[in-house]
View 1: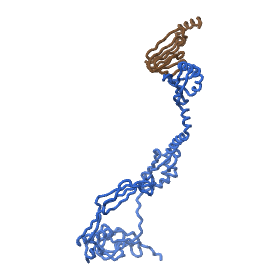
View 2 (view 1 turned 45 degrees about the vertical axis):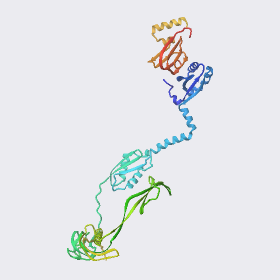
View 3 (view 1 turned 135 degrees about the vertical axis):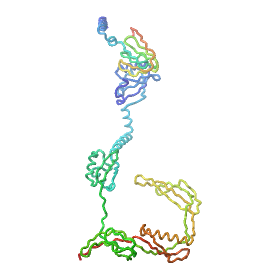
Length: 396
Length: 97
């Protein structure tokens, strides 16, 4: 036995005892039934340890043996408690920290949903909320994950399986959706009519009755594929479907300038960095004026962001890029070429990418005020069908 | 201790083969290497320094010399010494006790 049991709990002191007869003091102490340990010679006397309870009975023994003592160390819980009592608020803070750590770690902080494609995460979250799974919920109030998953599956339609897993303070809801048949868009009964005046080059009816033949001339609004089958008495209405292509003429008025101006970066730049505090910006780097004749300034502001909160603190960088302006002069032929290209692109963009330009003809061309004016006729093969719903008003 | 008592004690000791320390108040000294020393049945400390420890016994005294001697604990009539123990000398003197 080195020291009495639970001596640190009961508290013990280290004494330094000096006197003419230290041995006598030791004998007196042991004779009084006081336990001492770690007796070692130190300086002119000895240092020893004894329990706090026994400390108060020492005085008569010291007097009797003519020794003096000096407390050189206090250990154990009673002394610690006294020290803590002196610093109450520190102790309270320590305690509160522990409690809050415990409470905050027994709370659900985030819910993640994985595997859902068609069902909105919000719906799943709402169902989970009804089951008691939501952020800032106590973990000990949650049911067993198996049971929760079963009830969630019952709550949500269109779901084959739900897995629930809690790791620490976050919950992951794994969803496997039921396979749903693809829904076809609902179509109303309709005709296909011509969008514009054209000559039909190709007609293919998937559903419905083709009314026009190839190489026939149609006007805007003419029915191409009819959605009415049968005769007047036994009519059936269907959704006309099909592909109709026709030759269409487009007239374009094009104006192309001979001189073009453009600007390009030279690669020279000057950066300035600012520290942003609320409304103020303090320049940190990049003092001095730039020597650029012409420049463009790009300003980038990135504030510190905490979660979705933007803090009034951040960086701002200004990049001043040198710009060189260039002017180009084109020959009339090149300008004409450019104008035609642009018109062709416009046709493709407007009438579908599968349009084919069959022929083009410059009707008129003139040069004026540094620009080339052109009038061009394009012959284009394109889709001309347009939908027209059939309105039933036979009741009247 | 009367004469009859002493003889009775000697006789019981001879008959029952009991340990001497129980019957005749002799110290029991246990030495572990030269590091630890346990002494039971002593009668107090006479001198204590890091080089020498003198203990009183019922008859005579025990002088322990060594280096860095520390009394690890002392409790009633038991005592444990730690340190580098060099020499244990038993001084018998009838008149001391």
